[in-house]
Amino acid sequence: MFVSMNRPTTDDLQEAIPPITSLISKSEKAQLKLTPGTWQHTMLQENLRALHLALALLKRTNGAAASSREDLRAALRAFAAMTGRSEQAQAKFAPGTSQHTLQRNRIRAFRTADAVIRAELNDCNA
Picture 1 (tube, rainbow, N blue to C red):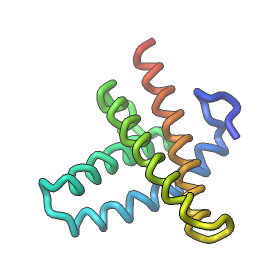
Picture 2: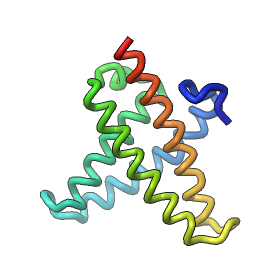
Picture 3: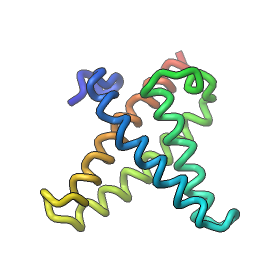
Picture 4: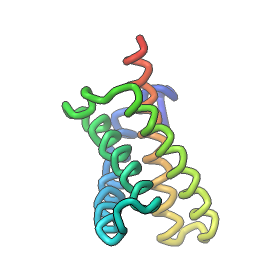
């Protein structure tokens, strides 16, 4: 899958974009239904920040370059939590089902995003 744990391949980056884009869309719709200030709204807001940052890094757009070390660290924490929740959800579904495949694709995208964010953080520290 990865040529290096720090640097995903171009194919890895391209494969991670659709699941992240889809989750951004679903999360933005869900956030509209939540009351601002609740923990669910706050968690979703943090996840969305992380997803947008990762998408910018995956696409290598200018928004990614403006990220601070703290933004990158917060994104890593959000991706760790999202990955853990997706792994728990995936375990509830039989392999081959659409739900299992969805979670598998998200987990793979989250791991790619995590690697890209870590590489960016390493570049900031260098």
